[in-house]
Length: 387
Image (cartoon, rainbow, N blue to C red; front, side):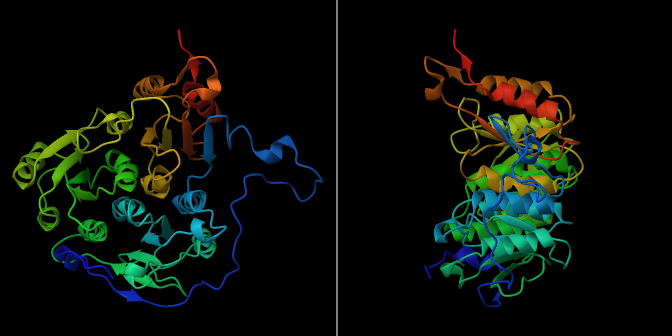
């Protein structure tokens, strides 16, 4: 194993278990076309278009974070040969949305570990099937560990597990952050600070953490917690990017962050427009900076389940590399989202086949994101002739 920096000791880990399989049959790649057993040829309805996919969008049609996480993991890791299996997967209890968003950083470099959910101490069927299909190879630098268990998530049978728990005065978010830094081989230059009480403002941090490897810490609105202070100290005082307005993270917290490494706030008036602000933001060290044509977007409902952001975070780590944009009304777009999509709409000069293109992942069923809204997003992503 490579020599680890001194601060790796802050990430208390335990590797246990053995074996290479959960004992279930190996599943094939995810199916995109369903043919009824009672027909001899696919019918238009069997293809589930236009809501499963349009020319510029692909939908994961579920509002269940367990199912979304399993599907997203299989999209990025189809697991049909050695090179398409992940080294590790992350397992977190679906009841702890803060731990799940914090754990999204482990989908970033160097681990690239997709996230799956337990339901308390139970492994839901979708998670069991995904674990069998993904069959993680194991990380040699972590004693062959195949699963990173966050907090009290169960230990999958037949797989070697590495356990992360809160420690040294930090919460589980701090433990995840210090472990991620240890695997990256250096303290982070940036962290994101998200609201522990207003999940809508915290959701965009999951995709950015997964893409960049910048960890997420949580704090309440009124004052900087001792757990957050301990984590920032252990991380050697990185610059903090506060995600959300003062109703999420107050001015007193921002003031306390300044002497600990500096601070910048990224926000707008509500969770939806704030997600656009996060997608647009960039400075010389940090951010998506996605205000130009030719990239991806991940759309997630802003509703009552912040776990969907963590479930979809792996989609931002490869392929389209898209920021997470929240959707409010299931039938219409917030003006901030319309403006953002208009700004990234690719123009064409001559042959449109040579133009940059956009693609969107849409997470949610038709009750959360209507087919009409999906069609509108598709049109706004379409390239247009330049004038």
